[in-house]
Length: 316
Image 1 (cartoon, rainbow, N blue to C red):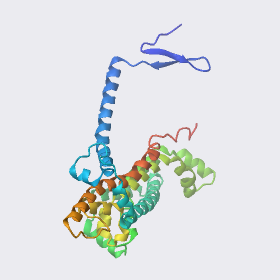
Image 2 (image 1 turned 45 degrees about the vertical axis):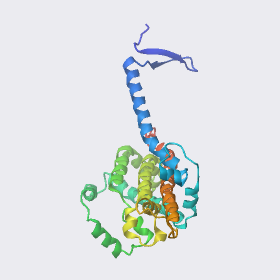
Image 3 (image 1 turned 120 degrees about the vertical axis):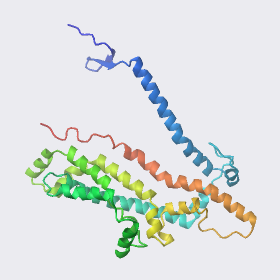
Image 4 (image 1 turned 180 degrees about the vertical axis):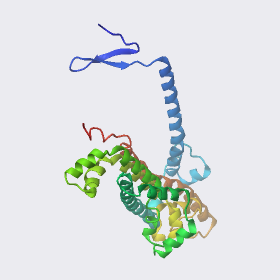
């Protein structure tokens, strides 16, 4: 007896000769998908136009940028702003410091987050609900800026690199994400099987939990890395040595204070005008330089967001 399925159409045959079917889009589905595509294209345009505008200005001449003649394509193409940026020792030092803070801070933050989240995800851990309540309490109430500064001062972290990574090492939101992932996707059967084989908690965490938790580790690592890379307020408060400044402080000096690091004071109006024009185009070059690492890293991390590594981990 043959059965006809309305809304399905034949699409071909597999290598074994069995026929495959696919759902045929209805008129409503086509209209809906068309609307979704239009909205996505509009969103892409809204996001892309400012980026293209910034890149175009960064590769234009200082006079064209100051005159406002640059839109979406470089006018009088020039790389003078990038030459100035990469030749300035403070800018390059800030770039290196940002990498140090981002990489080191991310490693410390991810390690501490997993160390807290995994025990809290275990149902056999006594007092986990109390500890989790205390962590959530810190999301709603904090000691404030002055008490935090006094704590950092008493710990001897002022004007050191540790002041950029230790005070903000643990994010409660990231702990909640990791804890929820461990509790919902790491089944108790895996722990029982590992215990029978003689594995302890640390061995189970290192050999089983972490390999199966690559998606959540990638997510929280990306969160911490972006936070550390874009962080400048902590540096503004805790750091006094320009040699420890991250790139964001240098970018702030150019954007807000409108100054060029490492440049000498102009002696006449022409030099002041040239310096002002160069500062205007240098703003856009620094924005591109500071945003480039995140834009490059993100595509390699985003693939872990929806990757189902738990499929087939437990059978029976």
